[in-house]
Image (tube, rainbow, N blue to C red; front, side, top):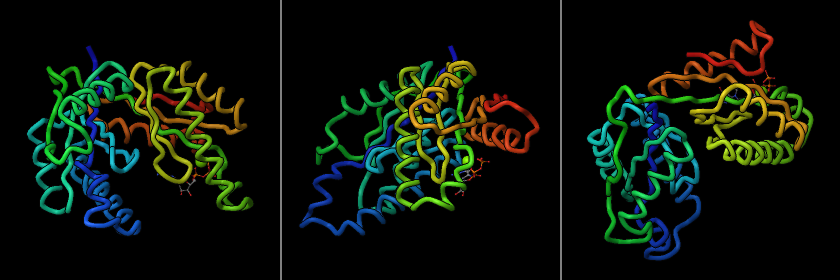
Length: 251
Ligand SMILES: Nc1nc2c(ncn2[C@@H]2O[C@H](COP(=O)(O)OP(=O)(O)OP(=O)(O)O)[C@@H](O)[C@H]2O)c(=O)[nH]1
Ligand SMILES: [Mg+2]
């Protein structure tokens, strides 16, 4: 069976750490979170994975092709460079929603996010055999967002993009797919099992709800790196009007 592999990365005992010995400055926490995400993205990307910011204290990473030993090596880098440690758990399934459920259950069984005893735990299991590895990733983009950026107040546009995120997330979750905001007017949706008609139906729901038009390149490959590259190329082809389609699958 073809499976996506997702890794949940969770900062260990972060809540208590943020108030020890007394509440830390928010600017310090923001800097730590941004630098930790950057380090994790660099580490996973060098192994053909792709990390998403999610909620910063909990991050999800597509890790097909990244072994448990490589996860351990990344945990060691984090514990050397940062004042916090991270636990990780790996889940696999035929849909992204189910893979993150499996990853989450493995970590929840390994101990609480607030436990001082849980440090750099690695739980769960990766895809086996490796020919099961399969990642479908949609790079989704708002049509003509520059018109908004150049005419509406900054915060109004930001709010509309966040509403678009929420609308997309709700419609995609009904189809066992996930979606992450990646900046600007861009979203990336791990979406194994969702076909072009399903994605078109999701875009219609967003259009009906918010009046926002979307397009997407969708990459299908054995690693997140390759799927993301194909997806972004697909989007580029749509833009260059090489195709009249608003959704373009590439593999
Ligand atoms: N993360 C990410 N951000 C991007 C990417 N491409 C563009 N952006 C950001 O998104 C903003 C909007 O870019 P576009 O989508 O090209 O502009 P647009 O006006 O919506 O044009 P169309 O999408 O072609 O209709 C840019 O100003 C960038 O900030 C990308 O590949 N990844
Ligand atoms: Mg756009």
